[in-house]
Each structure stands twice: as C-alpha cells, then as structure tokens.
Image 1 (tube, rainbow, N blue to C red):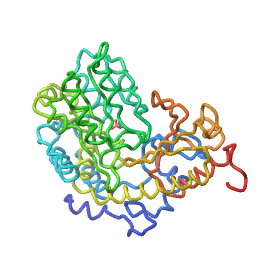
Image 2: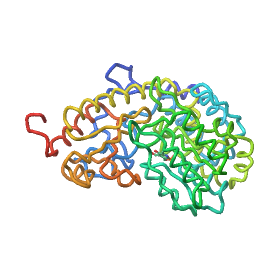
Image 3: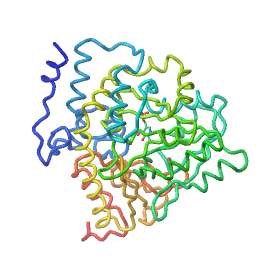
Image 4: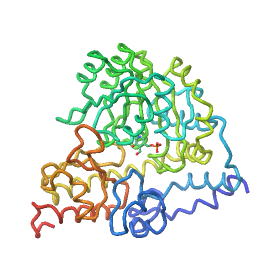
Length: 414
Ligand SMILES: Cc1ncc(COP(=O)(O)O)c(C=O)c1O
C-alpha cells in the first residue's frame, strides 16, 4: 500500500458540524465517561471514574486525521526503527515557523530531542556544563522544577508582574543578572504556562539585550507557540537573541499544538551559528532517543496540520469565553487570568473561601482534578490550573461541581 492509499483509507473523520471537535468528531463523543473507556493516558488513569480530569495538558480532541494517516503509514511500512537525523522534520518545522511567525530557520540549525523536557535539559548540559544559577519566571509549568533537578543548577525564581496584567519583570531580571552572584542561564516559557501569555516582543528584545550583556544563556521553551489565539502576536525568541548577540536555543515540538505528548519527538533550534556550534556537541543518543513515529507525526502536523490547529484554537477560544462567563456568574471570589495562547486557564481562588488548599478541596469535594498552583513556584499558592481543551459541556460540569462547594454560593445561584 502506498502512503497515499493508506492516507485515504485512514482519513475517516466524520463531516464537521458546528458541534464537532477539530477532527469532526461530535462534541457529545468527547464525554469524559466515553473517553475514559478509550484512552489509557495519565489523564484517564490517575483518578477514579467519578473525577472530572481537567489537570494534565492533554487535549480531549481527536488527533488530526493527517497525523493519524502519517502514523498508520509508518506502521504499515514497519518503519519503526531508530532515527539518525531530523530529516524531513527540519524543513516542516522551518516552513511552519516562517509561515506562522516569520522566523527563518536554517534547516541545519534544527536538532532532535526526545521531548521538550529533554530539549531543555540537554541544552543546559551543552551550553552550561558546569551548571550554576538559572533564573526562571514564576509561577511556571511545574515540570521545569523537575527538569532542573537533572542539572547542577540553583534555581532563582523571578515572579512575573501581575498587575495590570502578567508580564516579565524586566527590572527584577536585570537585578538578578547584575547583582550578587548573577545568573548563568535563563529558562523562558513562551507562551508562558500557566497564564497563556505570549510575551511581548519588546520585553523579549530587552531580555535578549540583558542576556547578551551579562553572558546569560537563554533556553526558550516554545511548546505552546502553535496555539497562540487568533489576532495575538507571537514573537519567537531566537531571532531577537540572534539580533542582540545573546546565546540561545529554542526547544519545541508538535506535542501540545496537536496533542502528541506520547509520540516523543521534539526539536532544539539554534538561535545563530555560535549556538549551533554548541548544539553539534549534543550526544548522538539525543537523536536515537527520539521516536520515529513522533518525527513523522510532527512532520504531518507542521506541514499539513494548520487547518486542524486553527479549528482547535477556535474551540479553545470559545471554551475560554465560556469559562470566563461561568466564573463571573457562578464562582464568586474567583479570578481568571484570561489566556491568549495554549489551552490552560489560571484561576485565583484566594478570595473564594476554600482555604489554603483549594485544589485539594475541589478534588475531594467537587471531584474535579485540577493542577495545584503551589507546584508552580513563587506566586502560585491559592491558584489552580484548568484544562480547556475539551467539550464545552465538560467545562460546564466542572464549574457546576465547583460552584456547589463554594461557601459564598447561594443554592439559588447554582
Ligand atoms: C511549557 C511546557 N514545557 C514542556 C512540557 C512538556 O513537554 P514534553 O512532553 O515535550 O516534554 C509542557 C507540558 O505540558 C509544557 O507545558
């Protein structure tokens, strides 16, 4: 069977309707009770059946037909061996980066890693083998703290500014770079998880200027970048680093944008020739530890998955609007930071009357699993993170359950 034959036999998504997910699957079929029967990932196995799982960053949407076809074609061809290079992924990613963000990526600047977490760790090992101090804006994706346990770094948490809206605290960053022992590296999350914040280009340019001036290596995790909302600008860090002369590498993948976390293939991209020289020293195992299935899934995503991605973003934006309305109506005292990228919502429960550990109360009493803000570092206590990549009814059900345990909620307003 040729790849094309295989593709036509596999692309069986139902006709899309307004009530369908980005693959055309009726939203009613994203009922958590049904998904739990079909899927085996952490989202569906960590908690008992009565718990609504809105914690880990996995989508409920069906994988794009183009990606299913690419994966099936590789399996049909028994092509499940080791990788030796980024191959077609370099071009697919570079074309996507150029079309979507205007970032011109030389193909030989693209290197492979198992996943973005490995991309962060391996970059730090190559660029700063002696370790040192690493600055991290917080609250941030808890996985960062786990990754940084694998390298000899002392973590310097730099809370984001929160008012009037979340933003990098450039004054604090400059102080960290210039005062006392300084820092050796900076871990950027752009767009920033959990706020769904695509950092402003001018802030990133200033970060690049400071990094160049103080010899700070910046590793930029841009895993959520494909999911920037319609009309919102996304500035990749690498071109700004190259312009400022800052040493930087970007690590990203199709895994968040197209929901492929288990496919295990990411890229590390050098910002310029100097960074590329360092990345050529990555251990050869970095390539063989990436998955060939993940690579082909990534190629299909970046080269054929834009329409699916745009539909996913549109659904996430609708869900975010729904959550915002439901929070205002039914969760008194709760404050939503409105995301502009990704599919995660950051909710401040400090005034909601659920005490110091709202995540536990919500799990124990409302039977909704969210992420505990305390794991996101400085500034995270009293907050929870909620996953929006699901059917709107799942969000309605979660808010109804949480509303029912809030002390401020009268029975009538539930
Ligand atoms: C900012 C960020 N980086 C990295 C990851 C993990 O990515 P990977 O599974 O490719 O290591 C996540 C997962 O949610 C994330 O949000």
